[in-house]
Amino acid sequence: ILNVEQSPQSLHVQEGDSTNFTCSFPSSNFYALHWYRWETAKSPEALFVMTLNGDEKKKGQISATLNTKEGYSYLYIKGSQPEDSATYLCAFGSGSGNTGKLIFGQGTTLQVKP
Amino acid sequence: DVKVTQSSRYLVKRTGEKVFLECVQDMDHENMFWYRQDPGLGLRLIYFSYDVKMKEKGDIPEGYSVSREKKERFSLILESASTNQTSMYLCASSLHGPAAFFGQGTRLTVV
Image 1 (cartoon, rainbow over the protein chains, first blue to last red):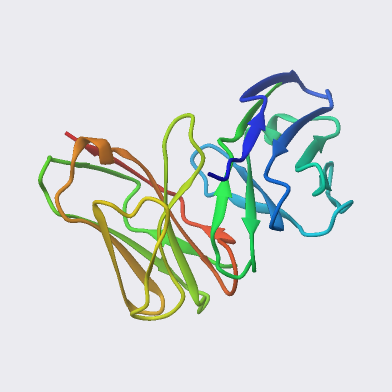
Image 2: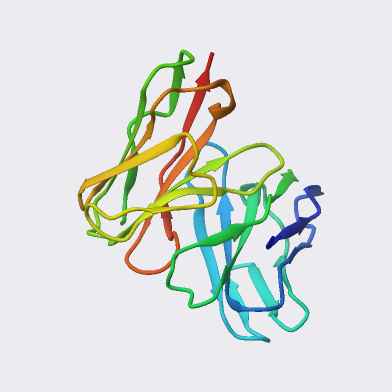
């Protein structure tokens, strides 16, 4: 059974703090690792798609790294703002990748206090 | 902007009712997906579709069916709703590959 684990489950930080969380996934048969942000009462929004070992992606103050050999990805938020409060989901795609099937982690819920 | 629209934000249905959850996307995407999300669990794929009239089972298809008669519309059907189908349901679409654009979700309660 393929398993994707995210830690921590939830996180509370102060505005301006930098934070990071982890996504662990199977290291075999890797195709892609996806990160999504899901704000309360909104639709999940795709943040990054990462396919190569050592990939680093950046969007504003959010960045992500990928290690496919050991099966983990980190998401970093530099100088968190209240509007960064959301649940961050990672999802693992295996095999040919175009099957459309992803295995999602349970998410990390971030609360940024002003 | 791609829009994926789910017909209801909240639904309350009785056990045994037939329930239809509708999803429409406006970007001519080939792929459409239905997921459910439960506390402490990741999104789980129920069904997906690569083309009109085409469907494939996801990881948890039991108790559900789907319909894709037109490219833009993908319906999830609960033939006889049960309380263990109380959940948040998310529809998604993509041009190719995995889910890229999600709807806002339908929170279904079966009583």
